[in-house]
Each structure stands twice: as C-alpha cells, then as structure tokens.
Amino acid sequence: MTGPDGSALPTRGPGVLLTVEGLCKRFPLPRGFIGTLTNRPTEAVHAIDGISFELQRGEIMALVGESGCGKTTTALTLMGLLEADEGTIRFNGEDVTHLGRSVEAPRATIAALERQSFRREPSFQPTLTMKDLRRQVQMVFQDPYESLNPRATVFETVAEPLEVHGLAGTRDQLLERVRRALEDAGLHPAEDYLWRRPHELSGGQRQRVVIAGALVLEPILLIADEPVSMLDVSIRAEILNLLDDLRTRRGISVLCITHDLGTAAYFTDRIAVMYLGRIVESGPTQAVLAHPLHPYTRALLSVIPVPNPRLRRKRMILTGETPNPVHLPRGCRFHPRCPIATARCAEADPAWREVTPAHSAACHEAVAPG
Image 1 (cartoon, one colour):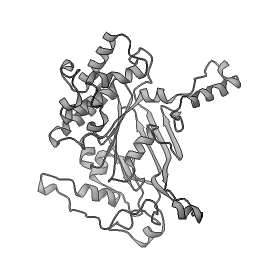
Image 2 (cartoon, one colour; image 1 turned 90 degrees about the vertical axis):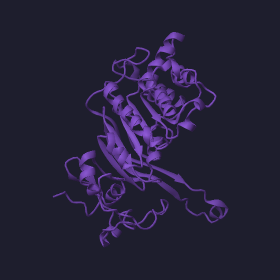
Image 3 (cartoon, helix red, strand yellow; image 1 turned 60 degrees about the vertical axis):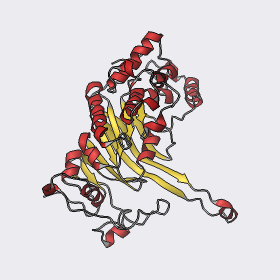
Image 4 (cartoon, helix red, strand yellow; image 1 turned 180 degrees about the vertical axis):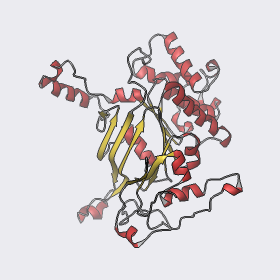
C-alpha cells in the first residue's frame, strides 16, 4: 500500500502495531517558597503509573475510565505531545518513546551513526523522526469546536497536513486528496463543504472535518479522544459507525479514549479499563461485558442505561472520592472505594494476572466465571 505521495507505507494486516510497556508519566508540583527554603522533596501527580498493552493491526481498542484516571494523558504521551518518564512505546516494531519534537535530535542520532560507519551497512535504516510518526499516527481530539480554526475554510483545514508534510503536489492533486478525505469522513458531496467555515457546520459535521483532517495523510493508527462526547446522542452512532467503517475499508487501527463503557461496547474489539493511572482489567469486549472481573468494571457497567428492565444490572454505587493521585493509597489503589475489599487489599498491591484466556485483571478477588 502507498501513501498520498506514492511512497510505501507499513503493511496493514495481522500482527502487533503498537506495544506499550511500563509507561509512566508524572507531573511535578511546584514546591513553593516555603518548600524551597525547607528543601521539601518535590511531589508529583501520578497521571500514568506503569501501564502496558498491545494494539493489533486493524483492531479497535477502547481505553475506558472516569475523568482523571489518565486516559487523555496516555493518548498525548503516545502521540509524543508529552514526554514519557519511564517505559517503552513501540510503533511498528520501532522504539518511539523518546523521538522528541525537535528535528535536531534525529539529525544528531544519524550523525553519530555515520561516525560509527553504520551507514555503510546495506540494511541500515535512518531513525524514524517525529514527522514520520505524525504521518502514520493521527489524533481526533474531543472538542471539534476548539480543534478547528474558526477563520480557516474546510479545504484549508484538511489540506494543511499535506502541505506540512510536503505532499500537496499540484492544486488539482491537493483538491482531489481533500475531497477524498471528506468523502471518506462522510461529508457527501465534498464540494458542498470545501469552502465553509466551522460556524457554518453542525457539531457532527465539524467532527467529520476533524476526522477528514486526520485521514488525509492515510495513517495506520487513529487515536480518538472522546470522539462523540461533545455530540448529540442522535449522531453519536453515525460517528462510531464511521470509525468502524474506516477500520474495514482502510485497515486503520483505532485506540478510542472514552469514559462510557456503552460507547466502547458498541464498536470495539477489546476494552482496557483504567483507574487512577493503571489498567485494572483488559480483555475482549464481549468477555468484559458479560463477565467483568474487577469491581470497578462492574460499577461502570451497572450504571449503563438498559432499555429492557429484565436485563438491567443492580446498580453498584461507589462511595467516597477518588484517592489523591499525589499520595496514592497503600495496597490496591481501588480498595478505599471497593465494596468487596478485604484486609489483604489494603496491604498488598494486586498482581496483574490472566484469569481466563486473553482476559486479565489486577484484583485479589478476581475469579473465572462459572
């Protein structure tokens, strides 16, 4: 498969596309005047605290959790918009954890390799740059009202990535690529939208323009951060169906960030549930929905509206507040709110273990169904 400029893109097909191992991101807090005088140790918010997962080619995976659990920070770190403190991110088999946003770092790396005569090797491949990664990984942000330039037309918005990457070509070629991206994003016919500005579009149309801007470079991974949370209920299914259709037609992998398990259940292959910076359960969507292993997952499922009263779950209302991410509780970090917590939960941090095939959880009390 080739990109917009005819160059080869990584193969879409079976296999692991994205591997995350032990990823951590902390945000140091200012010590203040008194803290500086007393040399008080710097404290930090543990936004991501050692998460690991894999995303297969052509797979749609949901990262689910309540606000503040670290979902968006994970997405921004994967995109390179935030620098990881620990852990490894591998994209297409290549370590991209510390690519950096500056073009100077890759140049320095290549210069060092040249001094070691590695370039003489026929199999040598230059280090992937952040610009290369941007072309293959695109992000759809949560709020289409904020992510679009109000002064730019739809054509200018969607065409900008091609111009940045030097793939614009002639005016006719640029127009054709923009038109194709808009059509793939569900804006038919594209000519009706090319010269509009954001204030002339509905919320759903704005989100489709954002998706078109991500698709125009023909990426192989799309990170969608709450792609439907700002939209009316009537058009949420249309956007989710669009993402699923893109997976089918283009072979794109999708990492969907959401707080709503109902949204994840609609179109994802796999779900990873996140709580206070860690993934506490992961497995195939149907397995997680039918037999949740972690009490936090059961609590999230219990509040999903179900039209049929016979199929409704007993509501599981969690008590207390989410612990402070600066001062994490000892043992299982969910135990202060867990309805089935034991003395062991307050002392020992539960190990991550596979309870049933491909379905794992970090909980002392997790048992296989049946």
